[in-house]
Image (cartoon, rainbow, N blue to C red; front, side, top):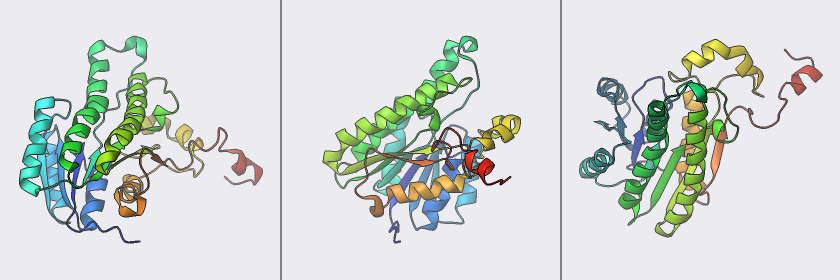
Length: 262
């Protein structure tokens, strides 16, 4: 399957961790010949990622608070000046704090909404402006928490539910400019962000997954490569679930019990 990314320019937010989905997505695009720019709020981390990724191709990192309108506008100005165009943009930035709603401060609630939702709105609008002439693809990171509420991480779930809806609205409003907007729904992926929760609840989490294993960032990256490619040219306003079957049925253990598979 030809993906045809040679010479394409791809932007990715939330790419400041070598253990993260953003890093895997960037590496996947670079391996296919794309030129990539990254951004993250953590300067040391994103510079380290930039250094690591340079072995795969042309990449540049920017230090940006993607919830800040002024900084987002400056990001796109700098990236367009450095790369000349934008073909694909991935809204990947997100935080995943654990807190019962009654214990959550308003400040933490606002921070989750700013990073997970406001950034998608701000970056999505700037990406649209950059793609209006020649078209392009916008891809938003969602979560299975958008479809099934999540006790203990209610702010995260609420923010991702909003991203789910926003993605569909963007798809309709950006379509006249030949801009496709899709999203991906990761399951339980082994990243730095999920490490603590996975360590606490590994066996219970795996038991809820049909494939009986946790996902890897590369599993998500491959789905994003497809969504952004011409092979998906008639897909917009839709999501790919990369969950190992976590959402396919309410009782994924049925087959294992029926056929005596451990």
